[in-house]
Amino acid sequence: MCVSHSTINLLPQQRELLNSSEFAHVYPSLDEYLSKMENDGIAARKDLALLLHFLVSVVGNSKGTQTRFRNEAERFILFCWNEKKKSILELGAEEIRDYIDWIWSPPKALISDTTIASRFKAKSGTDIRALNESWRPFVLRQSKANRKANELISPERSTIDKPKKRYSLNQTSLQNSYASLNVFLKELWESEHIGRNPISLVKKSCKYMVKGKTYKPPHTLDDETWQLFVDTLTQAADKNPAYEMHRFLVVTLKVLFLRISELSHRDYYSPMFGHFRQDSSGEGWVLNIIGKGKKERLVTVPDEFIDNVLIRYRESLGLSPLPHEVYVAPAHRDRIKRGVSRKL
Image (cartoon, rainbow, N blue to C red; front, side):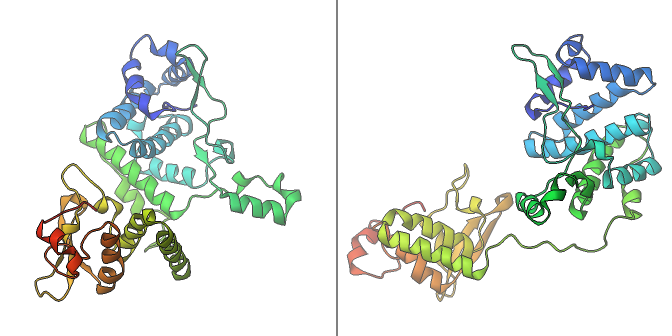
């Protein structure tokens, strides 16, 4: 049984309905399950109310963040209720260690092979949302390439050796579980619902945690692929000037190591050609950027970028080769004197 709504956008509504008579009508399966837990002496409705308050009022409005915290807190609540027969407010360090054991190697019946199913199904023409029997708290995410490879290598076993039998938590997921649970329990502790938050103690003695940094292959193009990409863009721009902007943006992001937001218009900042300027020595160029956290910084601009990227793009727009009063070609003298400024 799941304890939260399949649609993040409707969490505030579920929170409002929880202690009303309408809740049993909209969520009959969940209401029945909560009642069963309460008959067993578990304060399930209070636990769910605390979870919904955490997701709606504490975590914030980011759907991705709410989803990540919901998934972890939801599994924790399921473990408390079904495995320990306790409220989340009654668990200590030992139970949390047991929880980590549980998510490290969860019961196979709680793992979905490939499908991420919704928690509830809406009944057509009504506002009733019934339990989706296909939903599972754990999902084995296996790449399509791996699935195809397994089928190719051993097709006769692909239907016998179920993928969920190979489920295991990786180090990144383990770290994320600790982090999410820590935030949830910290909120319960600060609101005086629990006496302490034992996550730090449990994490320090975790038998599954690998010390130090784990290797993560970089998600970048190799030099050969990158060069092919730039060459293709350049050839496209040579044939059609409409692609000059694409070439300029891609190469600028790559060469100057910029975030895409730093070349985008924002309410408080718009990137301009005039933000390229010569440095104080007059021998090189820099770019003035408003970056993450609205912090201003100067980025060193290589001469090759000026010669092969900036000048080319500006000339494709009919502007002077360089911004400001840097004179290069007589044909652009009048435009420079008029102080024409263009957005990137």
